[in-house]
Length: 224
Image (cartoon, rainbow, N blue to C red):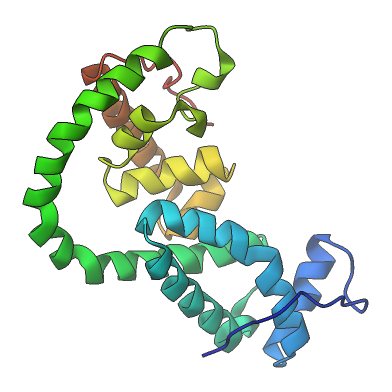
């Protein structure tokens, strides 16, 4: 397994940024250049880790999945084609696939824990009712944008109840600022499928928030 330790090293041979940087970086990694691989690791794993945490919700699982992502990059760097999209899109596609595999491995365990989890949530709902009231006191506060994570527990509660397919399109669109075309590449599905998932994700999220007494005014149709 490829592991990176220590501090990021300066690599003066690479361009500062942009498409030229990405192309040369991946070319060097394809040639098994470990310094180039370190540069990629430190440049991209924070975003990838944050993205995967929202899917896996476990630092241990995220660490495991990131190692799998980096191993895949190390072994298949020559497959990156800059004419097909940005490096981050390619990396997020790998991360998405690895996270889904980890979720599949955890699915049986989650089913066994479902009854206990539902019981615990009964008690949590009471405290969430209180936090929800304070969150809706000022409807003109920009921090109340529905897909802004500042909303706190009530939004996280609703997002956690979306299916992985629905949650991921919201995360990629509103947290990572990807367009539908990029999301389609990352999730390996047609753009129309992304749009359909976005529609149903917004609809389900609106229903969940409405049940908790929150007005989901920001969930209007249209591309993010």
